[in-house]
Image (cartoon, rainbow, N blue to C red; front, side, top):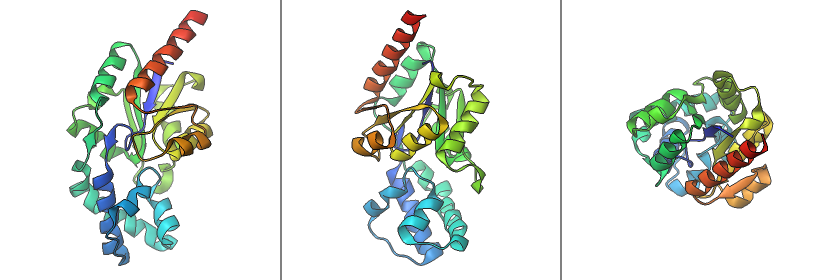
Length: 224
């Protein structure tokens, strides 16, 4: 198991402030909806924005893209910087690189934003590939992001790659793509929803995830 995909929001970075404020701005400026409770907008972290605008606020199809555009207006100018790495991320990435892991990002956030955020936080160089959603509707679902990651990484054996993520959307996307998902509980999902969605294991820290990967790798090498 030498190829590992990381989700971004809730897995590597705590991006709650920037995302929820961006959604709040989009609701107000595009849809005339005043939502003062940022906690009520946590559900927008993880899934495609278009899905959540329709599901939570019953936004009609013709108004979804303008709302997404308003979100991007805020996020690209301000919200992108309203985030921070979770504790231990840099150290984990450093150790994994030394151990020879191929590391890539697979996020439902637009790829341009993913790249800029990782650069701003000083960790972009740890990733062999940075794969995100397209700005248009063609690659927004997690499974489509994963398929693009496989293409860029020349993955032929999907049993040799897995996704680390924090929400059921990560686990669902991984199952659809035919790979395992390891869940983490410190992000925006719960242990219960990750397990129910198909995560093969769930841990509380990245150090535990790393130990799991190392153990799986050792078992693979000993069986060869």
